[in-house]
Length: 505
Image (cartoon, rainbow, N blue to C red):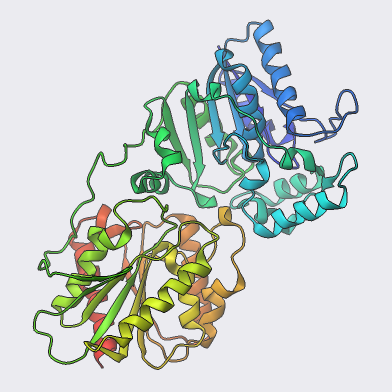
């Protein structure tokens, strides 16, 4: 028999699990939903201050009770903040735990408080201000969000209105100590098999995690252990409210050791560019590579290809050595213009400002090159570089002849928190004037990313922006690498023809 111990996230309590718990029970499992001290009307037993250590003790008490009762294999499930007390308890009772399930949560590390995992910078600052206000005093809490503010803590996609009303009505203030006290781990919990349940509607997919593993991000390499599996649900951050049956089925499969296993970094080399392009040489200066047309005479127009991200600082090869970007640059050079790739410093979600500075600097250096026609330049963005388009849409210079974007992320994903207002393309496009915009849209895009594209296109249409959409109906994000089909090849050709038409007109 399996006993699921369910630990909910910030502001919530056992009530969020009711439908999922009923379905698990109907399937023959035992279920214990933990009432964390200070939440959902559960006071601390001794009236002491409530912090992360207290919540770890709450989970330990349930683990020990199940063990005394002979409750079979224990599967610990932590949603959102709940993964912090789950890991703290598993670290102290590793021998008693069969599996840990990370339900749309982060990967907490030793010595790091739960506040670090809060996606929204504004909320983090609010917590720190509240903590400063009670410095030297006991207690202190963070007020729960209003009904329309739950999005700051994770996507509410697919949550029925009545369920969202109930979530709001029953929410409790979150004790500040639970967010500010560092998690202390000995490493014992790392020996326990784990499963990650990702919610695509909140901006997390298995493909995204695999990509970050492939980048070489050190903290994620352990996820390729065969004891680690992954599941993906097509919903927002609250699957126990938006899809309790699907969540229950997933948890049962996770408990049985099912799920998708990631490939180790370097296990599969990146595929070559999907088109046959000549192996033109490049000139490398600092963080910029130039691919020159083989028969260049006089200054030629240029296309700068801007990689997505965030890309870990340690990633090797760096983006300008990726076959896809090199292929695009060589294709541009073959068509008679200068192809340019660059490495910019978008290493974290907080790095858009420095990435924007890197791009602006590269643009000026490229335009200053005597082999480049400084009055005919195009910028072509990919994936997570989408927010960087706002700088150029908001007041395009006369030399910018076209702006293109492949499967772009055009707004902060739900699990990103809020981006600085400077990086909101849907707002900036109101000022794009007659700038030609070419958007290559993947038909099988992740829902969270697709919604940012549709929001941008709606704004562009409302303001009469000159947008041409090139659809790849059967294409996924990064379709050039994952969908090596005639449809994908034609999309690349069409996009390149369209950009060059505007660039050379």
